[in-house]
Length: 139
Image (tube, rainbow, N blue to C red; front, side):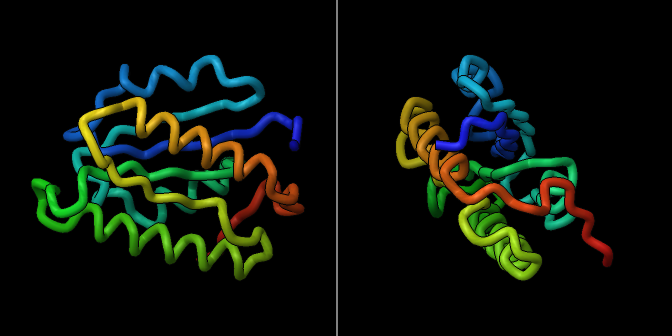
């Protein structure tokens, strides 16, 4: 396992989760977690996701509401498509796949989400260290 400090971002739908439900990340060894609440996960845009990697993120998670239960109709679908686009960009610049994840709530159980996010963090920490620790996308 990679013991170097990791930086992770979690974008989440504020209609489905609250900031204090994500407090379980404060004690993770060697991982800095930045959580960003959004009015809808569909509001996360490609520039937000790219900026996370530009500022040194090793991995980014988007937590969406339950599938087909978005109060804005398709927020979870839009978030998934944007994450796929960024994952493609990361692969294109040589960072590889596996640094983006979209997790849908399945139950009203924050422990389920915390567990899935921690599993993703472990997966990212085991990826080869990117030689692009500080990347810049030029549009």
